Length: 449
Image (cartoon, rainbow, N blue to C red; front, top):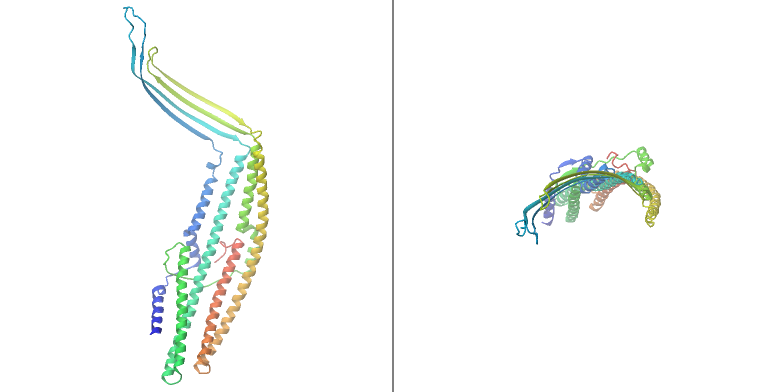
C-alpha cells in the first residue's frame, strides 16, 4: 500500500508540474528577455541615462543665464491738508484741502544677462569630466549586464542539468520497476524468493524519492530563471541542453586582447582620466574669472494729482552692459591644498590601475586553468559513461541469465546513474568556466552562446 501511494504521488507531481513542458527557451531568447526586463539592468541603464543627461550642453556652464522680472504696485490714499492761522480774503479761516481715493500705480519689467567668458578653464575641464563620467556610467551598466548574464546562465544551465538528471532518474526508476515485475513473475513460478521482490521494491522507492527531489529542484530553479528574466514565476518552458565550446584559437585571441576589453580595466582607465581632469579643475582656481553682464529695464509710474502738483505719468527705459574681472589673488591657501589633494588622488588611482591590471591577469590565468581542467574532466566523464554503459549492459544480460544477483545488478545501475550525473555536471561546469573566462576577457556579450 505504501508503495502504491508513493507511485501515485510521483505520478501526480509529474503530471501537475511537468506534463506541460512549454516552449523551448533558447539561450539567445533568455538573454534578450533578461536585457529587456531584468530589474538590475533597467536600473543600471537609467543611471547611464542620468549621466548622459548631465553631460549635455545644458549642464556645461557654457550657456548664459538670463533672468526676467516683472512687478506692479498699487496704492490708494486719502490726503487732507490743513492751514492753521491762514485767513482768506473774506476774513475767514482757510478750509482744509481734501483728496479722496488718490491712486498711484507703478509697473516695472526687466531682463538681466550674465555670462562667464573665462574661468581659468575650470568650466572646460568640468565639461570634459562630465563626458567622462557618462562613459564610466556606460561601463558600469555593461558590468551589471555581464554579471546578470553570468547569473542567468548559471541558473539556465542548472535547469538544463536538472532536466538531464531527471531523465536519467526516470530511466533508473523504469529499470527498477521492471525488476519488480520480473521478480514477481519469478517468485510466482518458484524461481526466486520473496526477498528479491522486496529488494526491487526498495530500489523503486529510493529511485522514486530521488526523482521527486530532482523534480522539485527543477521547478524551483525554473522559478529562479523566470525571476532573472522578470517573467511570470510559473511560466513553463524547457531549455536547450546542448552545449558548444569556443575553439582554442578564438579563446587565445580573446585573452591576448583582454587588456583593451576587460570592463574593470576600462572603468579604471576612465576613473584615472576623471582624476586627471580634477587636478586641472582645481588649478583653474589660480586664474582670474572674466564675466559679461547686461540688463534692460522699464518702469512706469502713474501719480495722481496732489494738493500742490498735478498728476503725471513717468516712463523710464534703461539698458546697461558691463565686463567684470575677478581674481582671487590669495584665498588663504585653500586652492593650493585642493590641487595637492587632487594630485595625490591621481597618484593613488595610478597605483590602483597597476593593482587591477595585475589582478585581472591573475584572474584570467586562473580562469583559463580552471576552464582547461573542467574540459578535461568532462572528457574523462564522457569516457566513464561509456565504460559504465558497457558494464551495465553486460550486468543486465548476466542478471537475466541468473549469473549475478540483484545486488550486483543494482550496483552497476547506480554506477551508471552516477556516471551520467557526473558527466552532466562536468559539462555545465566547463561551460560556466568558459563564460567566466569570456567575461574576464571582455567578450562575454560578443561571443556565440
